[in-house]
Image (cartoon, rainbow, N blue to C red; front, side, top):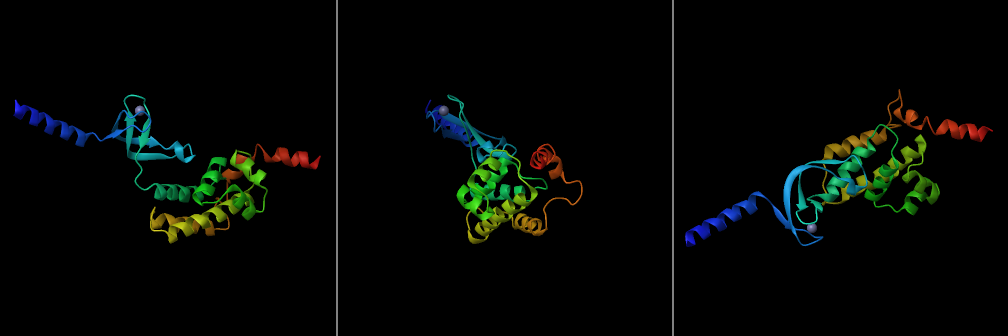
Length: 198
Ligand SMILES: [Zn+2]
């Protein structure tokens, strides 16, 4: 009888080792961990998928918690990819870069020589121009790369940093021909130009 108990305990222990368990922070219920691909919208971007990460899902309330061992490094790596994007930044991306760079909206607006309202409109999806886009990348990119160089925590792949620096050093990070940016702006800007002329 005692031996069976021991066996059960060992078996239970093995189960716990195979299936990571955690207490749900929302309801104190049990949350089981499972490796899967996870769309990480918590960072403010809709298209970041973490591959093969441990996701804990609560059996009682359904709350999800994803395990990210190197959060700073992840945010910096994503921001470097955004900085190299060959099209105009989206509003979400501007806000993300500003946050990772550790800049307030007031500070970034000041650096760009625009009003805080203008920056706020861009972050909420209003179209901005190519020159502003380059300036946003330069200011935020400088802050982000300075952080990477100065800090030990949140390490990233040096190759990503090198690629980003190379991209930012180009006169424009956008392809010289067939600018996708101009296609993105095509809907908004001719309108604005027309109304300015009249
Ligand atoms: Zn729960």
